[in-house]
Length: 460
Image (tube, rainbow, N blue to C red; front, side):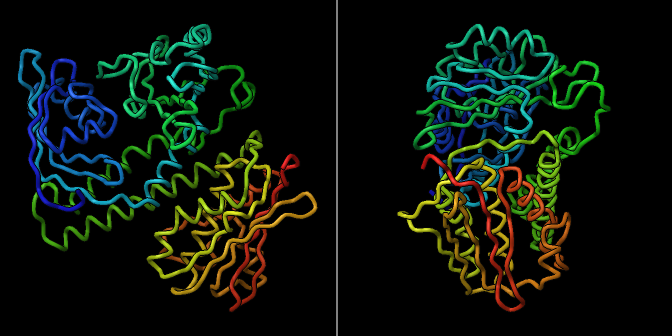
């Protein structure tokens, strides 16, 4: 299916914004992403365009993109309201699909989940049928709703919210609800859901984690008394708390629009302008990464930050990191060796934080090591500790550079690579918060060895 052959499809929606008829390939996209035909539209950008066209009452056109299995689909879509509440006619053209870079997709999802786990104001554990098992919340405007949800343990969580622009009714595939916007009784804020499937194959066989995030923070006057910031202390403005959510949306829109121009979905374009658009998209991605780094920085410097004491295997985490960054290493001709499948290094530390550290260490090694070299990840256990070492064949660090490497905003004289100089600083803070350490051994011309040390799992 991958390629750039143009396709055209016609589709029809009804008054509920349901897709009631559709040609291929749009019909296939709807079904493969967990939807039905007829059924609620499962492609978020298409649903948004249909909703706006009906609300405004006139024809709208734009480029949209969507995930389709292991491919990324983009197309030009025109939506024309039929009048009298009869839904819309959809015309799809310039259908293109390309393989999704595994590294980019997994890292973006990991960032979304990490952000949600840190900043969601309502979280819940759901069973395999999306029934409520536990609910946790620190939003004052949801106190009544949370009480109702706790009294309704065992019911579907969607029974307690008002979903925007859809006709969803249980049972609903979780992919239809991941990213959905909604209203919650008692709150005048809009909320967005993020759903993390648990269990083998990420199909939700082990249930789900649910996170609800608001479009804006509550005013200080109505913050709950059990919020992290003590009531008597002045609330400090922070990037993660106030600025980052505001910045992410316009920066993401800049990237999306630049990609639309670069791929010439809206029509042919001179090559130099397409290149300019590619530069804009790259700069936007660097800015988005910087926002994420600054958000994480605020989190790790919070005195109340406490990673979860998960039982993990450093060998398993290392193999996952190699899988995520393997494509990048191949592009530079760098051979990366991970611990063998029969190797184990049981440890105590929050899984996603340990993965974040290893992705940073391995990413640095791939970025700065010479092309055609090798990077090794090795694990070990001794005297109640477990460790993993990332060794590269780069130019190495002097003693003075080793002392500076973990400083905030330190880039060791490097420029032009889009880095923030926060990766190693954040990684060391995360390691120390988990009762461990992050150190480096190196010499000029001899590469570098970064070692993450954590408490060993006493039950292993």
